[in-house]
Length: 259
Length: 73
Image (tube, rainbow over all chains, first blue to last red; front, side, top):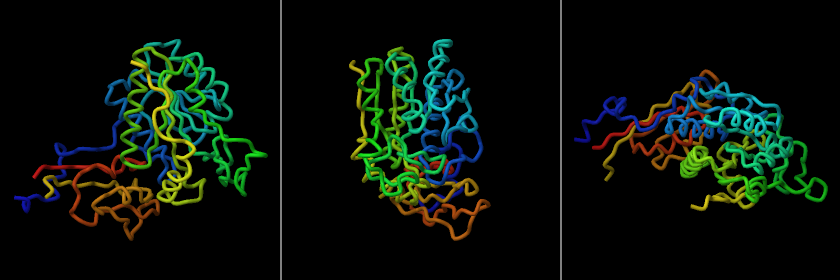
């Protein structure tokens, strides 16, 4: 029987088990080959599609590599000034409490210029979802050192590695906001293996569903690679991330709602 | 023995040749082409018939260029 199975007989609409979601615009993503942003965009859109809330969702795009997110995500989007996405999201959510509101920010946006907005939005417990893509450097501007750069990690502005004595310590934003009473669900995920992608999708789903319950802020950090900025191939950068980023930024739930 | 058979379709013009799918496939179905696409990337292509339709390559692909089909046999 198995001899009769041809390629053509398998490739049919009814046998399709996975395809790119229609909520991503049919356009080539502007990200570098192997960048985790593309995967994170797709997961988010899959979650919105599964919850069937694409017409009720407003996304806030950051400044950084994902500044053009509104070009790719087929939902209502607003682009915020650098770091101010949580403040814009606060306004959108307060004016339209029935909408689902998320911000999508990188580490230069959320953890450097937008630290105040992020911490205060988390502390107020705004009923929004913050998605934080952490790749340890400023990817878009050429791989400069960010607050999240690891000790000893080379970047274009720390070519001999980050020295903690002169350049300070890396900032663990996710652990920081988990201590605030306003946050409801805080987790750290990654998108570098199929298993981690599936876990990250579950976390994003939970974060969006929390908005229905009006409980407070959900904060999802996605540790991602920046192979161009790290000067590695995508496969090497994922390996480097596992060996160096995860010991400092351990994956898993940091604050889970008490049932 | 495998009771399922899968097949993937790759949108080669959108593939950026990051090779993540090759590393994700347990059956070594995917390899990079010798030719390049319109953007100059060596794109992913299937090299054998062992696909089980597990979708690992497709969920990992940052550009979502892989569509997966699966049938029970």
